[in-house]
Image 1 (cartoon, rainbow, N blue to C red):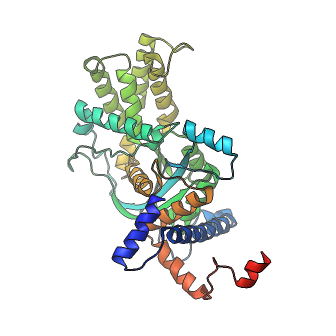
Image 2: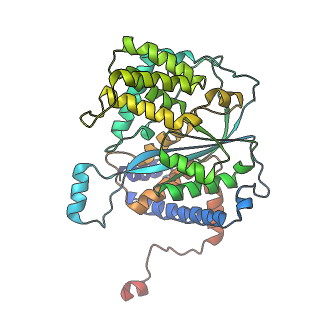
Image 3: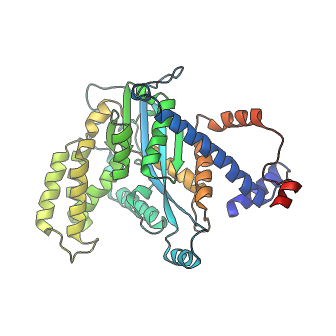
Length: 399
């Protein structure tokens, strides 16, 4: 893969060590697989604990004042060489190599509590048409670049795109980050994130928050492992649906007043006003029927209304700001961008095992808890001097 060739070149130039790209690839997979084995063992050990211990704080670990868990998904291409040749060719032609990788971010934060909402008025940058249009275009571009089956969870945008005044809204300060990444299913991913949260002492924190978009997978993980964390739907994802519902079938000039009123109400946590406005708009355009395409105004308004109704209990934004909690998942979006720089590209195809290994290594490198330092220390004590990827002459003859 081109990325391994670049690593080989870097070793040659910076370290004056000649290592082939294939060797770099082989060693990366071996080390990543070893880290996956450790991660799985740690997760299983956590799951074997009594429930009272799983929801407590490990000995010697200090729980942060504010513990925040964020989840989202990215995309990468996986090519299973064991698949039938015709099947593999068909998958490549249709673009079905794209798979979802799941990323979790565990971050300690600091913030103050407030008697009243410290920012009751919607920040000005959410009411500037040009900036909102740019944000929406970026979201659509990121989703389209993900390959087939794009979804809003592939976006990676900042809620403060275009700038923010500190006087308008001051989010919690970020502390130490831990990243979890895998291609495994949502159930196992949730167990991994829960185990990582326990090791950080997150269950013992005085304030806890769980952020995600409207994906059922995210809230399934919350329900199974983080139900004692305050659930918060990412404000930016909610904004995109409100904007969609306001603008569907109307020009910007006609739709903007509705958007401005609804997004201000949402920021204040008045979800009932947003639902009422979308209900009225649905009555104007009519209910969708089978002949409507996905881009039809009736379907767009219905999608926005359904989203807000389904997520309303996780949209108490004024309350969250009073408690000093974050209201956007921008930090995990940023982590996904950094993961994607290594694993995502039209020229990058991973084997199933290789994808898991490289995601684990990338998560380790992005984690500020420095898990690789401990791994190398353990590895040094276990070294035997054998080159295990080479067979002895006797083994080669036996084979």
